[in-house]
Image (cartoon, rainbow, N blue to C red; front, side, top):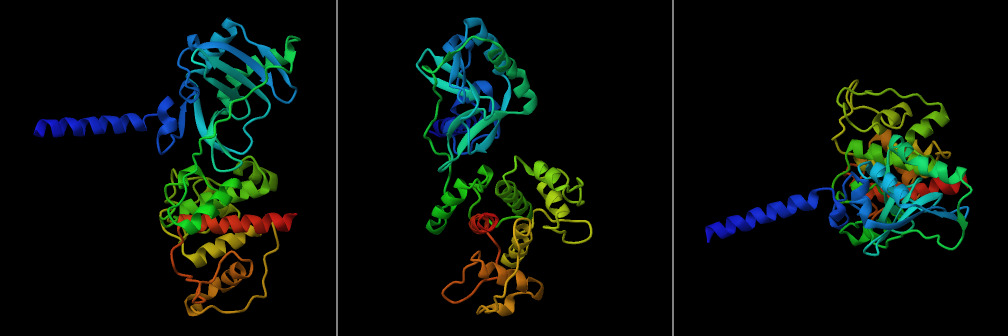
Amino acid sequence: MEVVKILKRILCIITAIMMLAPSVFAYDVVNLPHSMSFADATGIFSSSEIVSATICDIDANKYKNLSSSEIKYFYDTASDITLWRKVNPTPFRGVCVNFTCKDGTQISYYYNSGVQIGTYGENNFICYMPASDDTQKLTYLMSEFYDSNAGVYGGSLWNVATDRDFLKLPNHEWAQETVKEAAKKSLVPYDFTDKYEKNVTREEMAILIENFIVVTGNYANMDEYMKATGTVYLEGSFADCEGRDSAIDCLYALGILSGVDGINFNPDGTITRQEAAAIMARAAKLFMYVGTNYNTKTADWSKVDSWASFYIRWCIDKGLYMLDDAKKIYPRDKMTVEQAITVLSRLYDLATYWES
């Protein structure tokens, strides 16, 4: 009987390991891997599985059938390339390669957005994309397509869109609709969806604020924003942030975040609601005028530190913070991930309305 129990336990462990390994079955695990191979993302593990393929320009409404040798060469070049997970609001554009397999499966690879494996709430998708250097290894086929006179207009254009939704929602009902709305705005990084009820760390807040800036300003990434604004940032701004996200250095250079002393940032430390109010007000200044005449005090105003008074009043005035039935704001309470996402979604609406 004891042997049976041990065997069952071993089987459970093996099953768990298999589920965690990046593979074609990775779509079915709770936590999608950061990366997987082209073969795993497409679910095609040999060029012999492919019965036909086309290269297609969606915008030009033009396609070309690929020969067996073209299919094999492209697949053999692509199969081991690593693709990286990305939340992408516009996956279906430009040039794609469409594969049809023996079992009837159809899958597309887009040069601009990789392989789309499912939705991420409304108006967003989970895509797996290669790094730019690896993308270049595959552009030969697109160049040949553009340089050639071969091709047919209309008739066989298609792309694969799956309806499986990978957006995980919070347990708290009050936060579910808010997170859905935030996901539409690309304000919910995938890695945060299993942390909703946890206190947001200082590093995580930096990542969320950086993402807010990129999305609100419609930039490809934070480096593009820094270049566009002529802002220089130094790596390793804090002694305790080696190997941490570069968002910390960028936001420090922008004056949005500061350290806890002269040399440390305390990336794993938590954020209070009044500290978050200050951070969001500073981030908002990148897009709008930040000022308020709001002077009504909350029932727990005595707990608001003097340095945070303006920021709290501004957040209440602009609807970022809501008073509860007891007219309290809880300035020294820790902010959770779902609360941070909720407030940043409101801040996005405020900033984009101001810009418009």
